Length: 203
Image 1: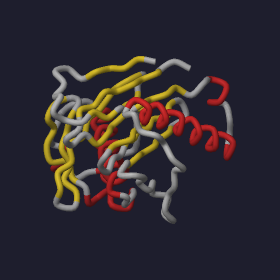
Image 2 (image 1 turned 180 degrees about the vertical axis):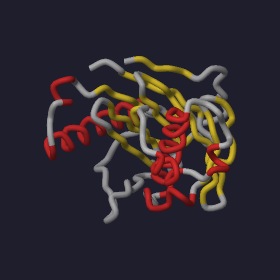
Image 3 (image 1 turned 90 degrees about the vertical axis):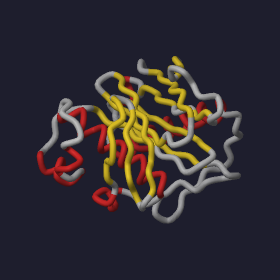
Image 4 (image 1 turned 90 degrees about the horizontal axis):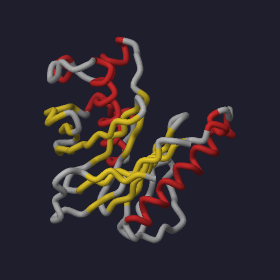
């Protein structure tokens, strides 16, 4: 397990610990409900690690009727999982995390994800930019508890650098931080937090 600290940490800001765990090769071969069940449990394991690092005692985790994680004792949490990796984070304010594998995708998805004005903010590799945008918006929508239906209502306002950008959603600015690993990208709501990523990239 490797913890990747940010350079020049701002000790005035509270620290949160997004945790990424690799899915073992055997479990990557699972199918259907069995695979979904394992990934969900594995993501909860990542959340346990995040909570332990933050010295938070997990209670019974609940979701509302729409599947949105419910906070407990002032703590907010978020999970995400793909075939090869899961991730989770816990925080003292609304939080969201998302991961995706960087790969090719259709032009229709580009149009669905962002406006032309947003794509013009950067001339980087289009697929890297797509997944930066997609995972960033997903993170904000998770933190807001609204879900993918509001994808078009969130806008990329500014790209700060390769690891940070700003989204406007519901007249609020959200600062997002990225972490790149094994042809994947993870994005988490940063806002006023200092981020220390914990990453286990081998199964």
